[in-house]
Image (cartoon, rainbow, N blue to C red):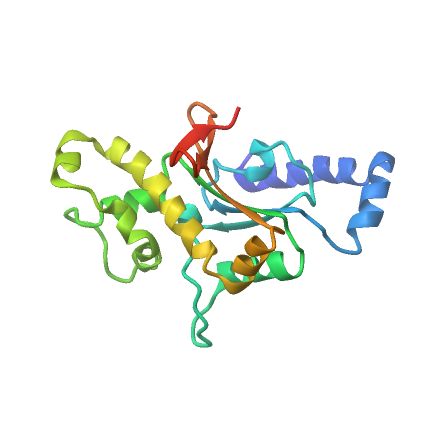
Length: 214
């Protein structure tokens, strides 16, 4: 079975469950709109699906996917496209979400591109990835000692978490997010999911460390 046929086969099974009588109440509710309380800004990586990781259902999480789960700084500019910013605005001002989670993960290709940008043969021309990753350039600033004592995997692990905290800080710079935080109507979080172990960590402001959730 090729990959496209597999998709259609999966859809057929989904539709059978979706149209089942026991799912009728949910369909009747969902057809008129959505009201998720959680927003997750996740990576486009095919191995990291917030709905699956949190065992959530349809309609429970408002999700934005982009390369390396980044949040750009707040900026009003009619000449620039703001997909992630628009989604944040909608989630906070219209959906009234109560939590926004930035979910980083291990083995992130965007972070790896950031770390290896100065390597020979890296393709810096005609690339959308490098300009996008400039949002978190500071996450890849390491001392000479760190670079000499840590391998690429270790550097990437640190960089993934640093980048999520930069995005978290950018997120709090959006005026409607800032207002909702002051009114205690919103909480923001930085998570990191390790693909190999399945461990999910959250940043603890008190200890300034990422700590395992359960």
